[in-house]
Image (tube, rainbow, N blue to C red; front, side, top):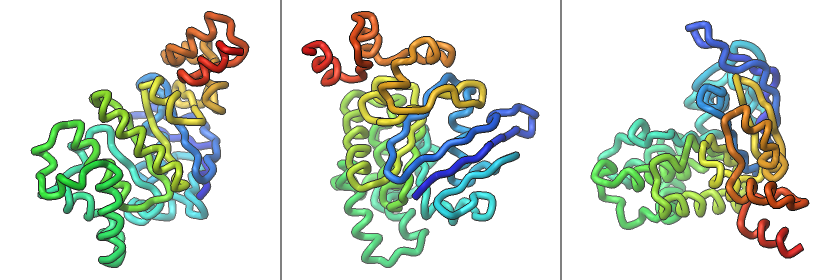
Length: 265
């Protein structure tokens, strides 16, 4: 389903204007990365998608729903949010119960809950850990439990807040695998990230924000090639992109495959 944001403005009770007229549309099935320095408004923006925050001005529509007219509990049917810190999200006695909580809370039949839980556990490689207390797992595996608990809700839209923070290389690959699987299923995946290499490898559209506004929005190659503008947001393009620019490659590259192809040309 479409996400349509029109002239979104948001001011915190302290008087801080965090969003200053954001307008954008995200089509069903898009993979979108939002980048920018701390305080750019990234988290404030995505918290409007599931109703955790309400616009001071403007509107946010998830499909045909205006988020101002639906509570967070109802928006959870359409938008799943994986927090940056899994410890803020996990509360059940074991992994199986944690992953089953969401679909049960949405009122799905028992058979559907079982199928969704089994699928989410398999996708996140947690099938052998169903009886384990999440807090007996390492932080990397707790991240996967948090991710599985959202996947099991089968929402059309999945938001990942800094998914690679504190993760080792093995778990980053697991997360990338999950994103690829969600893409194949037609899910919309939106991430906030400072990991620009992860962004380049896994997302086709990049939005760069600064001071509550959108500076760049477009295909990843186009946005990540705008080195000077990105510098104003304290974001550096991926290493291979920077190398390609220094070598004078005609095309902007963002991963190893694109780099080698451009070199051969």
